[in-house]
Amino acid sequence: MSSRPGQRATPPRFLLWWESLDGGPQALIGGPPIAALLALVHVTLLNQPTGRGIGYGLFWAVPATWAVIAASKHERRKRQALDREAGEH
Image 1 (cartoon, rainbow, N blue to C red):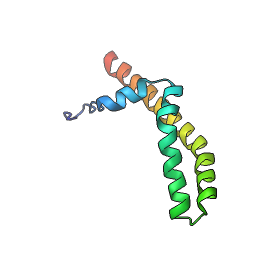
Image 2 (spheres, rainbow, N blue to C red):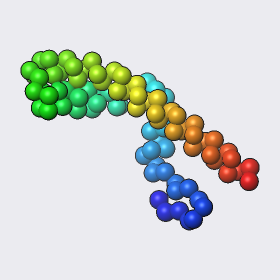
Image 3 (cartoon, helix red, strand yellow):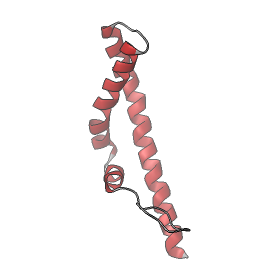
Image 4 (spheres, rainbow, N blue to C red):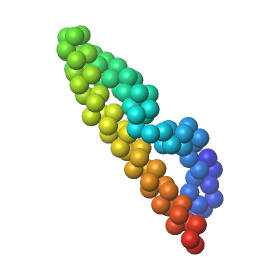
């Protein structure tokens, strides 16, 4: 991931793979860990009862997963635009 001055660093292969996936597979891969993490946060840090914490984790996983997918798609479009610009010069 090294780059020379004036050049952008090449993103890791995992990131390029992740960004190449459609939204459905990204949701299937990213949604469960996000739900588990948010449930854990609600139960431990926010002192919610276990059932309620799991419910909140599932509830908030939907917009959090959407945000991750939207950010991934935006970053991919931004990188492609920068690559096109670099190719024109």
